[in-house]
Length: 389
View 1 (cartoon, rainbow, N blue to C red):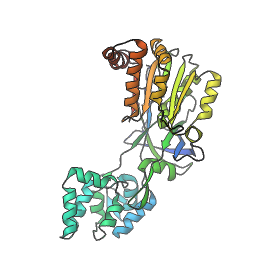
View 2: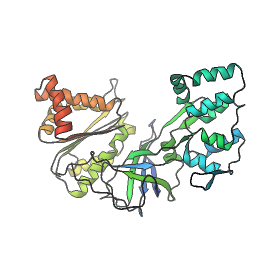
View 3: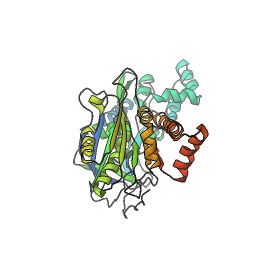
View 4: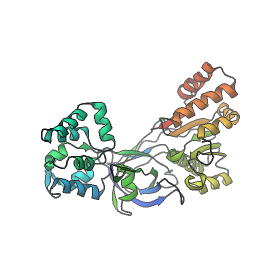
């Protein structure tokens, strides 16, 4: 792996985020796509940061203004009321609800507080039963936000202090950086899959993805961000080493950064990219960039898997198996193997495909193939690296 350059001295970090500027926010999918995937350009000029391909950008989201206003109105609260902060200052309730707390999913603590405030009767008993079971309570809050709960129990009221005390603090979201700073000195590029859904009769969206897509103002420095190193997910120090990258969906992000970096550095190592999504016609993000890199010789090989373009679903792991003989030759020639994306299914299926390829094309026994992938590649040689979530 390449040597990780230290972050340049900077006053900005997770505890003191830099207020960056979104300068571009555009759809990546083509007309007809059922997905909302965005390309965002974040200007970090003035941060003092230096980042490497493979790192992530942390984003502190804000809640939708309409959701904040609705919650305040439902409880009959004064949005401008000042609330005491730990540092001795005060802050308006509206800002506290917008910036400091999570509103897109009700907390268990809030549901228990609602149950305690209900008058005696069947409704109180029913909610107490739900709140008394971790499993049942988890299922209850999974699809409900605070408005949903208050719609079910409109008689319950909270003071501003009680409300804030029963809500969950907001946590930042991490996004793999999709750009090389060598090519974009003052910018960080992100690929964001926007979560949109309906439940309990209301349209909703993911806290951070919805914020980035709908509620960031272009060319205004108001996006709180910080850098996160990924010491193990980096390009090889040897610019001549071949690289195999598996990144379906938004998992493509760090590999776009890898390819940009290798292009700028004039790296001579071969590059093989596996990319997949639902439909080629609508979901092939960065298709033109990849085609240009192929024509220029940077991208040696591009293998795609569009799962819904045929009756039988095809995924990146299926393409790996189809081209297993060549993939094995790349590995034997010293290729580094990278995976980014979904940890629950994709990464596990890719991992198994790699073991199967080692057995079939390497002539290894099942146990030897397992040891080669899990020990030799991953631990001893560190040529198999994952960034999964």
